[in-house]
Amino acid sequence: MRSISILGATGSVGASTLDLIRRDRAAWKVVALTANCSAVELAALAREFDAECAVVGDEACLAELREALAGTKIETAGGRAALCEAAARPCDITVAAIVGCAGLAPVMAAIERGGTLALANKEALVSAGEVMTAAVQRHGATLLPVDSEHNAIFQCLQGNAVEDVRFITLTASGGPLRTWSKDRLNAATPAEAVAHPNWDMGAKISVDSATMMNKGLEFIEAHYLFPVGLDRLRILVHPQSVIHSMVEYRDGSTLAQLGPPDMRVPIASCLAYPDRMETPCAPLDLAAIGELTFAAPDEDRFPATRMAREAIAAGGTAPATLNAANEVAVAAFLDGKIAFTKIAVVVEDVLAQSDLAPQSTSLEEVLAADDAARTLAERLLGKHAFA
Ligand code: NAD
Ligand code: MG
Image (cartoon, rainbow, N blue to C red; front, top):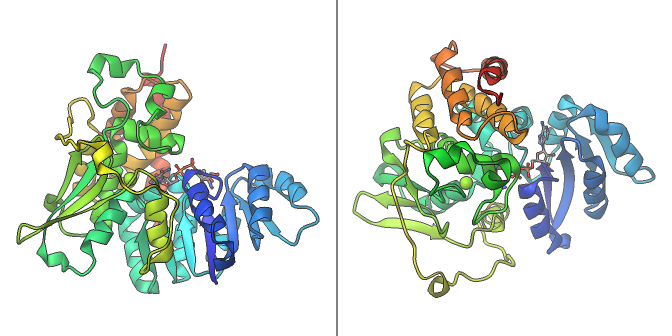
């Protein structure tokens, strides 16, 4: 029996993880399950999986959680510190599936405990790449990538030397608005932006996928996970989402990982690592898919990948600033406050107007940059808001 904690258990990645565990209940002991505020949903999961503790990040939701778990032995807690305490509880594997930089402190708490961290929460690594990778080394933790592209690359690198890598190619579906003109993009609604053709995901990452900022964040994520040099990282649009990424070696061999667009595949690869486990995913039917197509990204209509590349090349607090500005802009777009195309404008303006530090070597520096970028982005939203 192995023990597991899931940070962000009520989300899309959390649900996919619990679906795998539900299929083999006897093999898993659930330690901590967390959510931001969906107390009733979290309580139901904690009961079903007989969790040791259930924690809400938003303290205002704790009373509801307590009420929903009254009469059980499940411990309850609420607030930012409680999330970190839950993440620090001993377990064999922690799945980090909180969305946004809000997941950074709990991720750091899990890393400091040592052990294995399956990371979906890319914003944490993007914001604090240097701090987090140093902490992984220092505490002897194992970082396994859940993000499908990075999980693909991780698999393609097994048994090979990083020095032999010529290129790493991150594939991108291009999102639901891939073929839209600039004019049409201006008028894209939240419902259109989250309607991803291949993947069923949370709202924030779905919008990121539509702007291509998801691929920008993943470019930065790849740099920290697989430091082969920025000039060896490439992005390729592949609308079918069958090839999840590729590694080309110096002898001309390219290894790719293929699979259905179902997060249970990369999650299972982390849960069972270095072994394999069964998933309910249908076998890959390439004859039925028929065609795999590829195109270069269009950074004129989708400037996010260019901005992300520039931010990681600048280093220091630039990636944290890019990420925080994007989180604020995406939330404003989902709230109907700004147009789709203004997301990139807000991010670009925040980066241009921020006091970027050339280094970010502590968690405090990262969180300060995150905070400053949010404040600036909120201020700039007014300028770009719908009249
Ligand atoms: P989601 O919105 O469906 O779920 C997010 C989870 O985090 C929920 O449990 C929510 O309660 C919790 N949460 C949100 N804000 C919080 C806060 N401030 N404090 C504490 N908890 C909070 O998101 P998702 O789609 O599951 O994505 C989770 C992470 O995984 C993101 O970083 C995303 O980029 C990454 N990811 C997701 C997918 C996918 O298919 N959904 C694929 C690859 C990577
Ligand atoms: Mg991905």
